[in-house]
Amino acid sequence: MAGSKPATVASYAAGASLAAAALIYVFGPTFALDNEAAPSGRKKTIVGLRNGANDCFINSVLQVLAGLDDLRIYLIRETHRRRIEDPAVYSHLVQPTDSAGPLPAWKLHGLQDGLVTYGLKDMLDALNERPIYKKAISPFQLVRVLETAFRQRISRQQQDAQEFLQIVAERLKDEYHAGRRARDHARTHGITPPYVENGDSKGAETDTEAGTETETGNEGARNNGAEASDTETSTAEASTSDPTPKISRKRMPNENEEAFPMEGRYESQLQCTTCRYKTRPREEAFCTLTLAVPQVSSTSLTSCFDGIFKTEYIDDFKCENCRLVQAKEKLEAELAKSTSDTFRKTAEESIVKLRVAIETNPEEPPEGVDLGDIKYAPKRRIAKTTRMTIFPKILAIHLSRSIYGVGHVTQKNSAKVSFPENLPLGGLVDQRKYKLLGVVTHRGGHNSGHYEAFRRQNIPKPPFANLNTFQASEAYSKTPTPISTPDLSARHVASPAVSTPDLLSASSGTSSISVDLPLPPPRSVPEDHQVNGKIKDSDSGSLRSVAASTKSALSRLTSPKSNRGSRSGSPGPAPPVSAAGKPSKQKKPAADKWWRVSDEKVKQSKTSEVLGMQREVYLLFYELDKDF
Image (cartoon, rainbow, N blue to C red):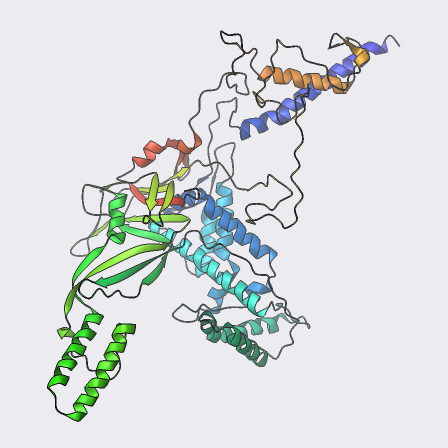
């Protein structure tokens, strides 16, 4: 029995050593990665993109898009919605009503399937990995998706970054609207399964095409307010044209969807300075806002915005209202002089029509009234005003630097354009504030050069971990579930054993552990094995108590050795300590840190360096400040 005691003590010591080694091995790297306090000299980095064939125009745009949180949230929510919904929702082709003509079936299939939405999400997820070493991937995966979606090859020879951004953004917008039309159609008419009872998939495809023709003729009337009558007509025509049997339809629940975050709208309006008539506003949608850079040595982004949103005065404009007023006054003058009953009757009818047109819509001249030659219409001075009606969550700005000269010679405008970090837009009533998140720069001439990207080092939100597992995740739902488990919080009880998450932390809450202070024994140690608050040096201690003591020792090693008190004797706050036990340097705030990415080369940058790229700036990406 006496010989077994040393073996028992040795086994306990070995177990404690293994436990300490396991704790350091398991929690040490995780702490260093999550809190960016790696003891080694390894530099932080992000995933780069390989440039295989003049792909810098693609790489720069993708790197900036990877840093837009609202875009990533939209892609996650949209792909998640498409995965959990019935595939029959997107199998029925629904033609758009605002297009010049019906879209080909292959193109509409690709839009409703969300080919580019899925492809861009996978690419941005790969770019937002947290590599522990230098890593670069190829953008060819997304390029192949785009070529499949458009059924044409994308040239890689010195293309424009703005053109690539326009292609991707417009395609994402079209896929969103195509998916929404399909979902609205399923909510209105119900969902028809893509396979019929006899299992013949060809019959289902024929039903899709027949339903497309029916939907094309009725979609516009439903959007104009005749939803009930057109619903019955569309259902009757679909049942008449399709002889295949159907399974019972089911309805989709209503849902408030958020729009594509890069889509905005602005409207322009003309006003005559003579008669004060205002034309009907003409609204246009945009995904990228193009601003012309003036041919000066230096300018500002605000001056470039004035080229669109500042009131513009145009001379020698022929106002439609003034033309009708002139025609009415001319007929009234001739009516007063005329003695012919036939002419008087015709003139009175024309005057009445002109009055109605002036009061209702001067832009549509009345039929049967001679207004004279348009070259004799009065010329007026008009004021053109443009304002933004729908502010996008992500504002993409393109600074047009092309100078078109005589003989089709195009040059690059190298004027300096100063741009702010915080951009206010709108009037006093509907003002919005945007924050700069990404910049694409270009060095070189008009026909050659190199693109680089700057993206802000934001706090990584994706993959959108749900902090409260009893409520809905933020990426998929805006509101919690109707009946959710209450959020229970445990009471804080002082424990001698340091918990696992705080194992290597420098401080916990407002208290810190000092080596000079005696520690109470672990709870697992009985009172009869304690002498003056310390554990007896015997072989009867359990392995749990040894492990708890090891945890406490490790926590003391990672915390300051002593809290040097102030002159009054009260202990002062402990300085921040890194995982290696050395005082850490004061870090810059995360909002001031940027990534400067040139294909595979990645290095850190500052806000002052980004704002200093005034001569090279080409694309700007701002995110809407929701707290403003």
